[in-house]
Amino acid sequence: MKRTLTLFLYVVFNISVFMRAQLPLSDATWSLTQQDAFNTNTLSPQWITTYPWGAPVNNGDEYNSASNLLLTYSTGYLAIKCETVTPITYTAGPNSPYKYQSGVISSTWTAKYGYYEISAKLPVGMGYWPAFWIWGMGDTPYCWYNEIDIVENGGLVSSLGNQMGFNYWYYPSPVSPPCPALPSCPGGSVIPPGIDVGTNIANEHKYAVFWEPDRFTYFFDDSPVFSVDNDPAHVPSHSLSTIINFAIIPSNWLNPPDPNTVFPAYFQVNYFNLWQLTPDCSTVENICNFSAGSYTYAVKKSVTIGGSSCTSTINTGSNVSFWATDFVLLNEGTTINDNGSGSFLMRVTECPN
Image 1 (spheres, rainbow, N blue to C red):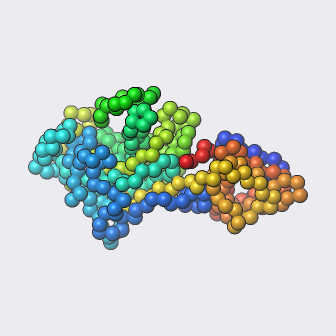
Image 2: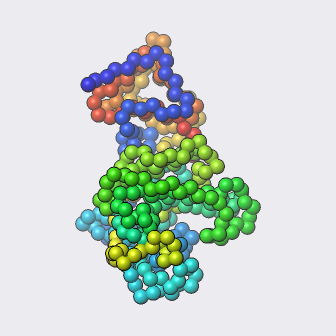
Image 3: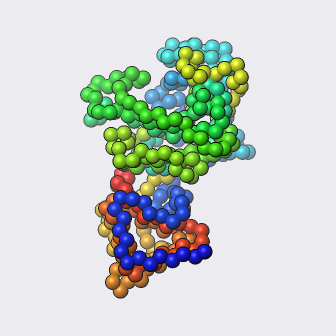
């Protein structure tokens, strides 16, 4: 059914108003700034095969090798293979000798804010620890540590087959340099319980986070499942690296692999996307007669549509979105038609720069 809404005065200061879900793919305010469809037989130069700090290990019970990153051109997947091996000695790691060999990719670039997304098939089994996360640390102007684990299914959560695990880490207050080395750096973490997504995660699903200057929101298959709102002490404010890896829970932690855990196992990633909002935060937009085709989509300082003697019609089929840092005002003479597929969004946010 067609629905029409004629507005005389509608101001949005700090909330979202929308008709139907609107994601980056259907919103011209976003740009696809990084992507990988994993549809070649060689890894893109935008990735390295260690963690961002240069090591082939982290906290897991596995040693990571480029040979375990399997790219299949015919299906367009990155399959990270985890397998048992003759123990590998790597004395710089916390769990040497390593009984498992797996893989990791980390971005050669860093980014701040945006919609980070993968489409993937997660391995299901006790002790598996696949993860898609963004991370960084530094000492300017003071020690800082930021991490958002977009999906991280470890141990028991990974064995259930219907859970999405996630968490985030932060410094609660500035720490003066010299900064302590990982993993002893001070800070805190928030680890919510895994969310029952009501479906089999061994099948392909989308996992994402929308990271803004003052909040971030987790998504499963395009639907929000958890958010951290208006909490600047816990929201990262530095450019971060992107990491995709398949770890194993160490034997001295809770819920490591048991006799029923199958090896080799695979964490299969179909694609990775990073969408970022286009900033134009100093522009004050005043439009009497709005045209979706000629509007420059970006995050403005303010947006005012309509007014006395103005006529503007906004159709949801045109996927119109208004983003601003101060306010969005739909004034008299503005009509919104909910006319089939598509969406309409008004959103006030901090400037994404």
